[in-house]
Length: 132
Image 1 (cartoon, rainbow, N blue to C red):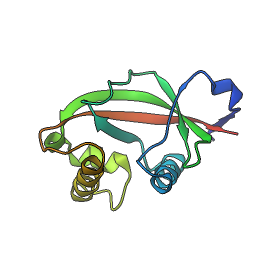
Image 2: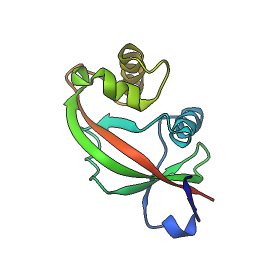
Image 3: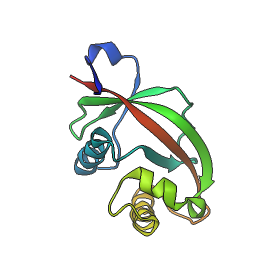
Image 4: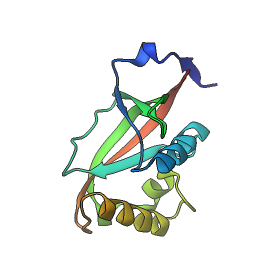
């Protein structure tokens, strides 16, 4: 059973929403809560890495705190080096590497540019708590 915490108790943690739209934030958050999404990545050009043990609050598409996650592992990889296991752990679509590559290429093209050799921070995380 996942713990429940108040929004006030996690007020000091970094907050973010997955994706680049309210709909995508809600969809990806639902995958986290369901236990299907246990990984994420972002451009190493724009934001630095998290650290194992670091906790963050995940916001829904309206900016409301909904979950707390904890970084388990962080690795720097080029886009083309992401493997099928990581793609599956991202929990999106049909869980395939092909789907992951298409969806993330589209995402990065919408958000500042894409290249096969772009550097990514690839993070695995665990769900710690749901926020009331």
